Image (cartoon, rainbow, N blue to C red; front, side):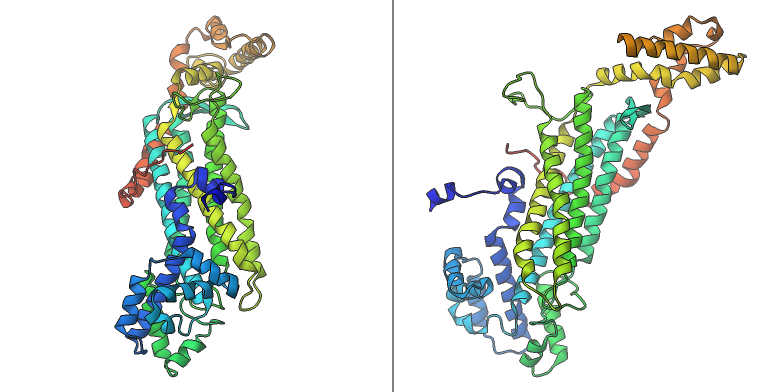
Length: 478
């Protein structure tokens, strides 16, 4: 068997990316354990409401809960071609006294859909915790570099100055938006309920001799045992597959934030301003030994593209459901939903790792600022010279002439920007202390203050709310 495993495809999402916790949630063992928890909750609730179920039967179900034999279930499925029936038989084998009362009144989706909702909730909670750690790390980085001037780029062209911390705050706020959406999804996630084959609860109504109140109580009891305070108000055989579509689209929004952040780091690494962590024994290239490739951010952007592309599949599945349900959803959901979570988990772990270890090169940043700031500072120089008694229009023309001459030096000859030297040597500007005007900190506006307010008003409350989640291990396996 072990030798056979070596020759089987193993998903890189599990082998290289997702955390053990997330991979565990989507394992076959955890899925079946959750099915059994639903079966047990249903039996306990039915006994509470007077159905002929004994304490011995419930004891056997509890004792057999984790005695999961996947190989035995697989043999049953070969015969039945029905996975729920296969695992129902396998559970009955380890709780033989309870075999006859398992699954009373239920259809497969009373078990599988409710279990899926439990797993979706658990998975969203893991994603939420990763987002909190990313927000915390970027918040710390933004605070540290709140007032370090850097060249702001629009259209990837020099624009005005900002600060490294302000840029980091904008990255961070994208993830805050994602956290808010995940919180909303968790708050709105409801148990499917025990509804029977077409959602009418007819089978449960028959079990309780026509007592609608007992059917209502049954549903609330089972939902409560599985940790839900509310059920879907109405369903067919399944909960609406729009739930899956909404959740995976939430993950796709996270992927957009990851892609944006990691692309920016890759661009800044190319400019040698900011780099992701690079370990002492890490190899950047098999050929070019000097390379420091941004492999972590590159991997995260690749995973992000996968999640963005996966977002369409659950929407198509939801659109394709016929009347009370059709089974073409099952094979798709097993792949699309699980892989979206595994990939999102993996890329957020990478982002947390990168954000905690970002390396900043202030002198390189200052050199780029110095190369462009003279052009950006010309308006301030003009206003200062005018205030000192100069003719504004004449001064404007002189600055224009000097600026074009300096630009030619840079673009045609590859020389340093000598605009400030030209202006300093021009008698028309002798009343202006050029060096005092052209201080990078004078051109960042309210960026440091914006960072402070963002951390105080947005990041700090999140840290307080989720203080127990902060500090998750984000070390990468490969």
